[in-house]
Image (cartoon, rainbow, N blue to C red; front, side, top):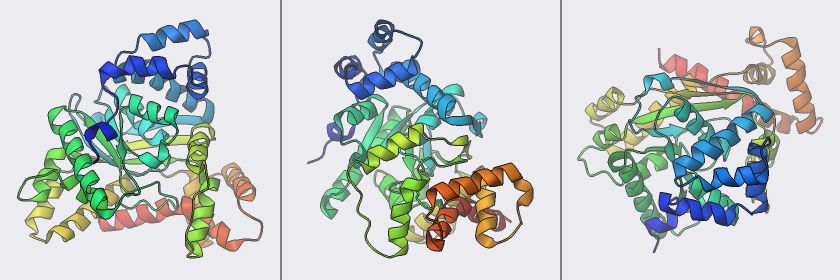
Length: 379
């Protein structure tokens, strides 16, 4: 029987003891030395000892870690839309998902810098099998989504997670992050799975499901990386999908993706917060459609905001033009940017493999297709 204790992050009262226990782990030690490169091990130890809550650890250590990662592996991180959110309010952030660790880390950087409530964030238990990763996830207010359960166990687990999210948002006034779909988007085509929304709805006791979603204050979030550092790692799964064969992850694949996502070059990164969905939910409710249709309409609404607010980079426009054999967006990129992207393709795609090339280009071009479609549907 799965309980809250099986999925929850550390309580604040457990943080210092956990930090003392794991500080000597080689990977945690390396993280700390990377973050505080100008300090000796004793000074770092004092910072760790001063952390007596998750917020302490996030603001004194992890915030600095993420800022250091951005300095070393990106050309800058920008945000938009967060100024419209209210300090002290809790929000249900539903986001596209590209990177295992960075997506939520960057959201919390944005929230912290805008003086907004930071999140409790969902993470698949398959991603934190290594003890130090489990400890890190619990220290950064992640809660577990159990994978590989029987249908009956899955329903029980989903009810537990749903009630946990409700408690966080409504009783503790803690914001929550969840990806719009299970697992990361590999092909750049960000689509909300209705199953995620149905899981969220399990804890609602309102007559109308949209009334419950209104209380959650759903905010769609779009994150875009100019270069996806894990693009080459996503290719085998895309090719398996193309060939219609089952894809089986190799050992350590998720861990390698985490490392590559953190250390790999990303160029520019942008995160955009949409608006709180409220009147839109009233419109869905007033249509009187069956519940399943309402979930579909909400998924489409979230998609539309994520696609519309997605920051498109030269890499996206280049991939679109190369895929279509057009020059539609040639003013959106320079010759230098085109050469850089072509070099990236050369290093990542087997020469002469047209199917692999198409899959690679679609990974970057799909956000353009989706934004064009979102603009048409928005009128």
